[in-house]
Image (tube, rainbow, N blue to C red):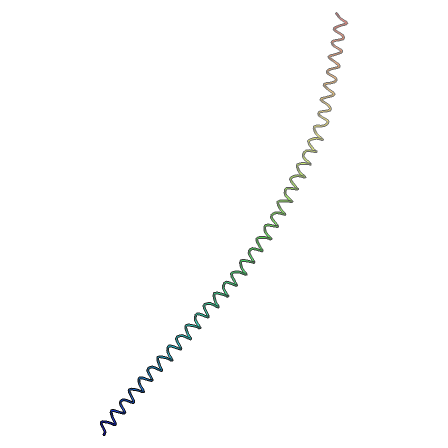
Length: 127
């Protein structure tokens, strides 16, 4: 009887240990699945947040570059206008300087022509 009782007790202990091991394995597996799911969720959330930050930074720099391009275009346009104004002013100054010179040259040419005609007339009279 003792042997039978000891064998039954041993069988019950073995069955309890087997059930406890199965339950422990199930609990550990469930916990590992939950940890893995939480870690995956955290990684996905972190990726999403970082992508959002990267998109905001990219948008900021794109907007800043548009503003810089607009400013540079305005500077180039104003510089071009300034160069045109300087060119026009230089042309006007050159015309103002050359106008009287050309008039003086024409007057000298006309006077030289008249002198030549007078010389020719005088030579004709002398002959």
